Image (cartoon, rainbow, N blue to C red; front, side, top):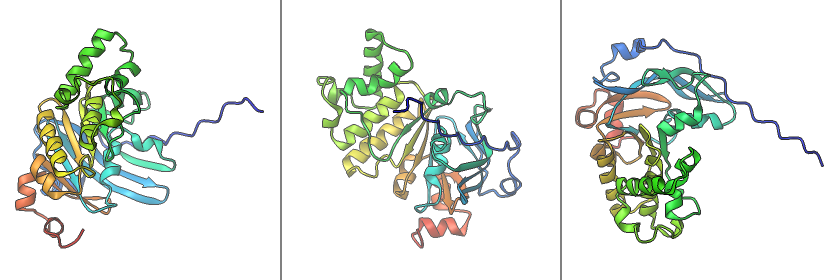
Length: 288
């Protein structure tokens, strides 16, 4: 039997850099794409992405405000989750992708070849559509990321676990059974546990990919309330198919369609007075 190590899969080529700070000409002309963002944390510059020959994102430019909730809305297949996964480079794990343009976090390109991708993913955490607790105890689920990053002192971990569970509004429900399996929690509790796990490593940004799609209305309300609490400390970006949810929880909303950014602005204005007919048609249910 051969003992040779398997050949690692090639990483996607770094994207072609865009001009660092100038918005696209189209965005510069179009008030529907350029809301006033006083403190942007993330900048997307002319980002395009292909899965093989299929173009999934087309020349997207937008700024994500710091310590606000930004929602991506649009019909299935419009590129919302693809764009979200670009922010912590999870798309790197997919074979055959190609990128052009850039994303900058606090002014620095996240596609810089010298960047440590694991360090980026510590700064930009992710909560997925389906809650995915590890088959470990509640305590170890929260402590897992900290252990990966070298934190192993029991007292320090105890403090992080309690702080994170409190931050996820879960501490009072689980404090007496931290050694129990996380798989025994309800669906809503598991999703809040995943949020606790994400914030345990103290990220700057939390990405949420349809975090309430599998939850009942009561659990959804708890997660939405939690998001409002979290935005005082973190920048949140959420993908949702639920336009009512976007209107309830987000400060800014981006409407995507067929891989293109159609409209982006303050949520209240976009839902009450959209500037694009296509946006109006979507939010009033004429298509989607």
